[in-house]
Amino acid sequence: MHWCQIGLQWLDMHDNQIELLGNYFELEGILKLRTLDASKNHITEIDSSSLPNGIEIVFLNDNHIKTIHAFTFMGKPNLTRVDLTKNNLENLEVNAFRLTEVRNRKPLPEFSIADKPLFM
Image (cartoon, rainbow, N blue to C red):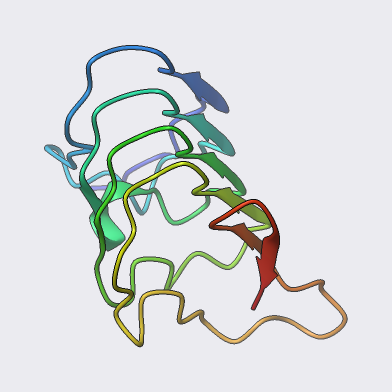
């Protein structure tokens, strides 16, 4: 069976009552989604299946995120920015922000987890 890439590029789900970014159809490898805005929701945790592999920009600010599982951002080579400000992060898993090797001369992704960005 041959899968084509699905063409949605920007998904705006901000300011709803979403509690979980689920991967019900296991489409993270074929979605062409570049920008995801799931800010101002009720999300409490994220893991690698929460985001498609081709994602570039993620807005998860103003949620209730307490847990970022290990390797959440692994296998996401196009990632440029992740906004996690205004969440309930207390403890971070040592491999929560571990990345796949960044290509030559490509800037490292910017992670904002407080009021100031964290570059990894």
